[in-house]
Image (cartoon, rainbow, N blue to C red; front, top):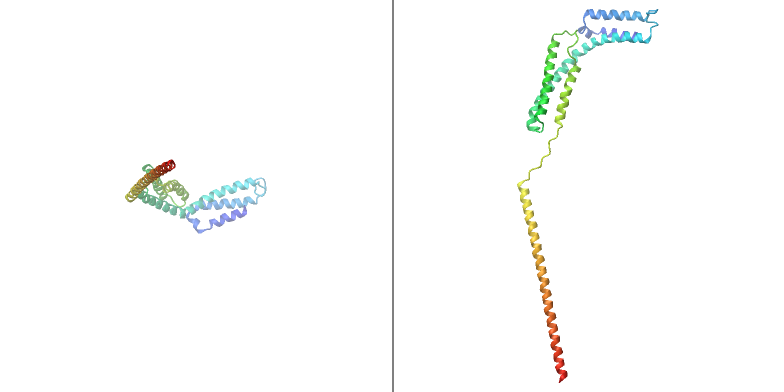
Length: 240
């Protein structure tokens, strides 16, 4: 506990802390810190020398919460303006991106675009309102909003825009080129001609086979007739 008190006192000695708390608040905390330090060495039933651990923890928690509020004001003096500017830049960038969607991302529907516009408008109104409230406050007052709240407000917008930027275009059938169609027609004609030539060649082969078969039949008949004549001639010779 002693070292904890030393740390708190050293923080209050920083020059920057003078801008985020009033003199009355500072004196009250320093007074309570001194009282807490004296309590640590007190004996008896209510003293800190023999107090239970839970008592130490409760006293430390109470002082930490008071100091934390002051420290938050100090940190936000620097972080809040940065977060505010970043949020404004995101809103401007979002509007610029949306202007390109009709030509570059026509697959993003009107309903989806409208959703982004509504979320962006809500954030803009919230920032305007909070900025107006903060202008009426002193640096020693509790901030109207924090840098973390600004970041949280942007999460939904960033999520929606990121999802739409990843949305894929629907697949469409590529139009056939005129040259491709002509080539296909030529190919079909060539195939048809080839089939016709094959049929003609097949018919010619069949006719040739028929001619050869007929020629063979004639040759056989002639041979038989010659053989018949020879037999008749031989028969006449034998009779003589």
